[in-house]
Length: 310
Image 1 (tube, rainbow, N blue to C red):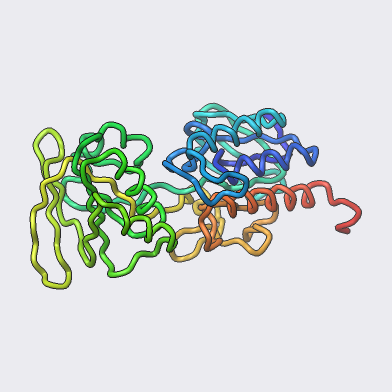
Image 2 (cartoon, rainbow, N blue to C red):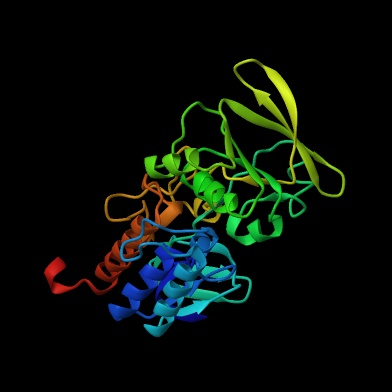
């Protein structure tokens, strides 16, 4: 069984930041990632609110973060899914599909996954007109008619990106006001080929081999209409990847986000959480980086007990 000082679950912005600060603090640090390192930052078509970058492609930013972590000496095991955690003892046990590890501290930075609409046709047409990533799939829909569902930052960023590729964009939001930053709202309203459907829900996604239309419900009038389109981009938020931590006894709130205090501590000594999986209310790249740094430094304090903390 391999022994580590610090194991970080997840290689998104929070996990990579924690990895860098773990290594720089002299901890033997391992980052485990079930997919490709970089996290959901890579899905953002454009990032305009991360300090130091006027504007940067999300994939480019995530690649820079991964390269930075590796240059600092962080070991990142990609495509190694964690299957279970045993957090009861002083030495924590992390099991993956490949191996079993022993560690003195853990940072849970497993991020989140895309929420689904849960309507007929969504599952059937995923990958055939239904997408959850504008950057990944947008280029496939040049000159097409698209619907973006959602009202937060991700939805509007996706809509603005797709507007440069598509013939027309319909933004469907179930409320009468967006939750997104005002700058994004202003830009969307000034986009000539974009139209907003307020107080509207998608009830069904229809098609044959690929998406052909959506059935919309106007909540104000209770009337439905079928809208011919070529693609649906679902941007209705995310759900935390926290089930494994929950099963291991880590405390969650009602929405299954890992409960943390001001310095990323969970209810279990030596176990920390950072980024989108935690209860920290602001889900941004910048805040994820800060939480990852804090979690790693708290893990260092827990393991090494430096004189200035005694």
